[in-house]
View: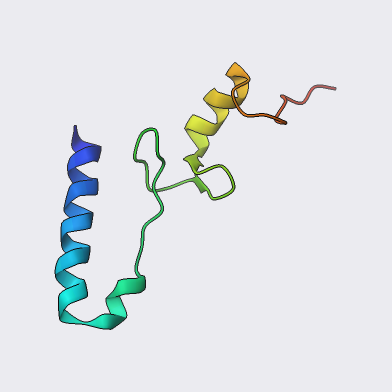
Length: 69
């Protein structure tokens, strides 16, 4: 609940700031599409490191395998 509220608040602030000054339009925070986490974001996959690990272990990300030696 809290993460969705944060996302909504970020979007609302972005719209308000976009109306005031054009330089703030480029400020965008990458967030995980599963949990909304803003930190530890992997651009290539669009998820945070925690969700990436879970998806990789479940085999839901093609081409990603757990290493072993």
